[in-house]
Image (cartoon, rainbow, N blue to C red; front, side, top):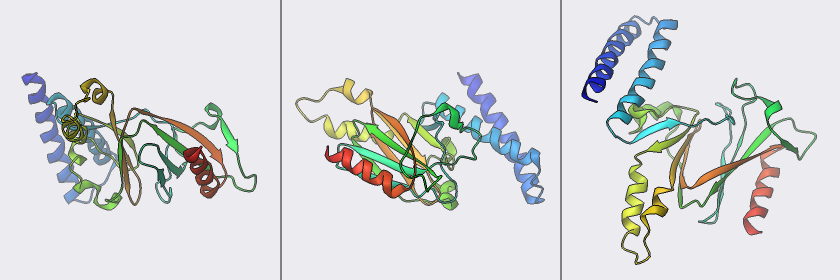
Length: 218
């Protein structure tokens, strides 16, 4: 373990030195961006190896627009849904692999409705993409315009500790929870939940908002 950590730290220092050198010269070549990408991967690996709180990208095939995804959250404290415009130009997206419900033939936009299963808590708002590098998890794998789950989540640990005073407290129940973070253009959504499901619709966000609200009350 010690040798692996040492090698990761050594390579990270090499990358930081070379990237800073290129950046100071305003030499933003393919090499610069490749070094930046490798740096993010190694920082995440080092954080996980050290057992730290770490943002790990989800295998999530529903990318959102980087410009104006217009995320909305609907919640009653127990059931929470996230709505946003999907980015159809993203290479991770393949329309042929998904079922899409057509709500409005006059609109070609695709809207994702993400329902979080057994959602305990959520946060919405905060830092935008211009200040994401100030986020405490930025050096531990957090990236812009991505869906993540958080390993060794301090938020889950804090909520679990609060609930531990209850006479029916069950640690196994808390061990099943996941901490998710979705980084949008102007805000961040994060929640503690068992999991999630995703439905896709062709139409307007307003149409999908109505569906999510109806599901909430039904």
